[in-house]
Image 1 (cartoon, one colour):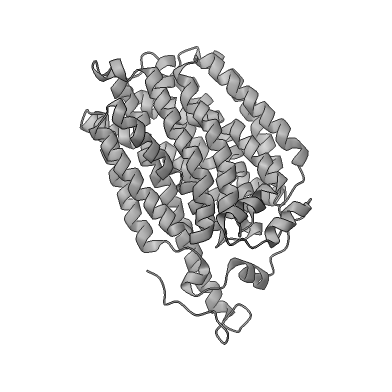
Image 2 (cartoon, rainbow, N blue to C red):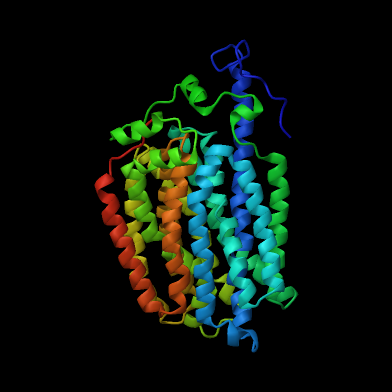
Length: 455
């Protein structure tokens, strides 16, 4: 339900005219709408993303399927999915910059629902492999597409707070999807297949909402672009260290996907964030994709539904994390994202090291507490790297390509998060994640004072 577009051509109102109040009001309404629909899109995608994680418990208990779909095979399927997801990140980001995110997001939502339905209908390895590839490519449309959309409507000075709140979407998705799908699949229908069907239904509803409510940029609804609006609002530039490559990338206007990537790859900070995210994402995806199995192995008396719901603590803390660290980065560190990220990583390292000895007690509440601390600190660092910093250092012109490259690097790391739990014990797994987090902190620390260009 868009308002009648107002032309911004010569002779029509602009932010410099007396109609500034009207334009500001329209901008506010559209910013709220874009915030809401992009939040819903990315949270909604988790209902098809998490379906396989929920179904694993039933598949491993099935006397027939478990012979061909063993724990190792399921890990390999996760790796197939995550490989396709990583490849997609490097494509959809630049495409969203070039043609707008609307078509990319709508195509991804429909393809994700289609793949989920057929994964429930055809759980044979020969079908699951191509369906996991399709699901991975579909899911990878979400992050860079929605962030490209957000970058068109929000300014640098407010992105720490706004994107901190916005990036609760993926923590909420991981929090809500698994218990919802598990409840429907195991408590109502007693069939792991239903997890796929229920997830597909949710994503199709989100697709309809996207078609009705999402628009690519302010210009599509007769409003000035964010750079002009920011100038009229008198937004101050962030204070800190800005490098020449960031200024150059902000100035360059790139008509093609390759030029977008060339501009982004010339920014050393984007590459640093990509390397950091490669190290961080395995831990999040291991808990996201294998959380119920990890809990079931550590708490041997837990039921399937308990094993699915206990990792909710990880997601609950993850919802709060981006809000907290986004606020800190804006208000305490003055739009510097790296200090908040490094502090978060230091606490994360300790929590990962202590996971095995603390959960050895078999106490459910200790498991909940440790997963909550890991969720708070991991999602906090994750949001600062993949969301706020990615958009800031990518600039509104190259937000899609920058988030695509950074999240693509992270998604390559996430392959190990899906693969390693099928082959390694919990102790080796979490100690390895702690080492990766320590390396990430070391990589980021020299950039403590770095801020993006205000262009």
